[in-house]
Amino acid sequence: MTEYGDFYIKMKSEVVSSLKQYFITTNSSPHDVDLGRFLKGLLTGRQ
Image (cartoon, rainbow, N blue to C red; front, side, top):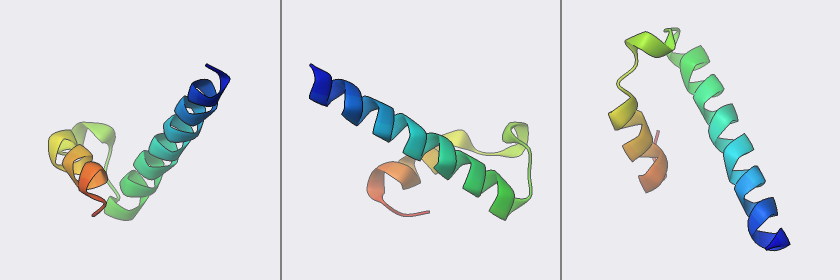
């Protein structure tokens, strides 16, 4: 259970930092972003 918890925390922090980086590089607010496309890009490893 601890391993899963650590993995979840790591993934969560990576997703948060990826979102921040994405918003910075696109120079847009979260409301302007196509989140579906972004999440699909995250899942396939492309941004």
